Amino acid sequence: MEESDRHLAFRPIMPGEFYSPVIPATTESQPEYVRRNEGDHDLPIVTQPCDTAQPVQHSEIDELHRIIEELETQLAEAKKITPPESAEGVLPVTETMEVKPVKGLPIVNKPGVHIHSDESQNVRIEVMDKFLFVPNAWQLSAEGEETLRTIAAEIRASDSRAFLDIEGHTDSLMSDPNNPMQKHEIASTKVRTVMDFFVHALRWDVARIGTSSFGRNRPVAENGTPEGRARNNRIEIVVRDGGE
Image (cartoon, rainbow, N blue to C red; front, side, top):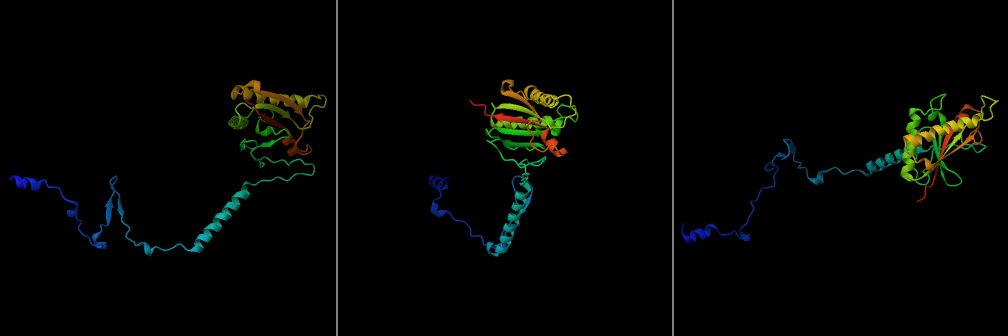
């Protein structure tokens, strides 16, 4: 090869020399399918012009908004359970009551649990006996243990150093009239069982637990009905600020 030919062979192409062939924009010139690199699936190419798409009617949008609003209203009504107060100011007995978060403590969604705040702005967690103990015994049931685990987890999430006052309460029905201490003894037994579970199973610092036995002295419902007595037979866990 002559020196002049070698120079032409390696001559760079100038920008002005670039050109692209003109491809007619016809449907016949476009391939029907494209092949994806990651698989063997053939995907059709959509060639429908944008101006042929059907617009969404305003009536359809309004109907969707109406359906959404109706569903939201039904959901709000389903969540709302507002028990009326009786003439004596005592709430009627219900196993599921509407409660609001108090001092950042989330709601414990367990049957027989009622959370509220007292006059000192402490959190009070009431748990009815039949959801804690084995029937006709003062041993924790499997449901009761699970309920206490949930309560302890929620308390720790709110204040890991909280103080707990575990209170025992009963109804006023005396099975042994000759034993005036009967209701206090029952309440004390229940409290001891719950405290043992918090200390040994849940590893709660015993120095941050107090106990009280009120017996039948602090009812929250009428004792004249089985439902009222079931509400009064309860454990209350009072959560106090643990400080720094």
